[in-house]
Image (cartoon, rainbow, N blue to C red; front, side, top):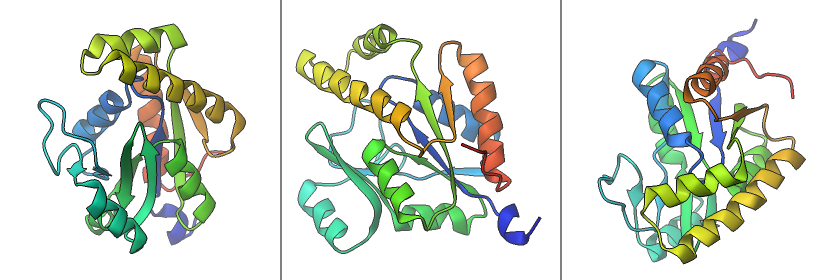
Length: 201
């Protein structure tokens, strides 16, 4: 095995809103903070209650973010539900400089951009809900969005689930039905990324 293959690669995590990505990622970071770092994304949406700037997201206005995108400061970006989300090169460099694998929690547009660039070695995982009905229940249970916002997220989720089944971007798909079983599989794949092992498609 060469030094290059031993180097940690990025851990790309995708899945529809409400599927439990944040829970899985946060648990991984708590258990393996020496091996993984969370790439803190930028967004133009307003913070939810309890969210902190620089912890959950970097919250910026749309004009500033679009300007920095034009200046080439972002690895990937996406327009989602009237807001813009993106991953800056600076946020990835910060994690790498600390000797850890960088977790990229991004949507399907961002995943396509990362995959299309072909310059970043990564392990891609897509988190699936046990059913579309379960996903809708989880979204409604959060109580943070209006009915219109929920319908937009559900429409987006439907496209994301179809996208995951039709693309070659993701090495592994995990159904988050039982959180303990889902996390065990999630952690196993994450540690492969840390060890520089890219699973076969």
